[in-house]
Length: 94
Image (tube, rainbow, N blue to C red; front, side, top):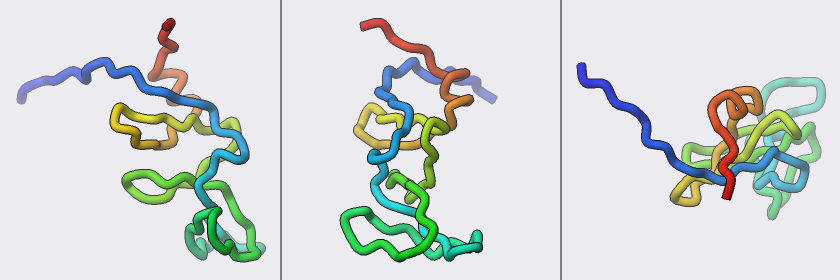
């Protein structure tokens, strides 16, 4: 089997804060059964709503100070857990 190394790529990232969400994951009160994902620009059910971002693969729930939002080289966005991000990425001095 041939081995490969991932090329170093510079990405932009920011620790998630309230207000950066694209929408919400909605759950009924006192339940962990997902109702669905709702963009914040439209109607959102009156339920337990957790912030979420839209990625190329679909919606992902994110938590304040627990996820970095990474913007890739083609403008795609995805969440990375803070602990994994800090072990995997290093800051670039510009």
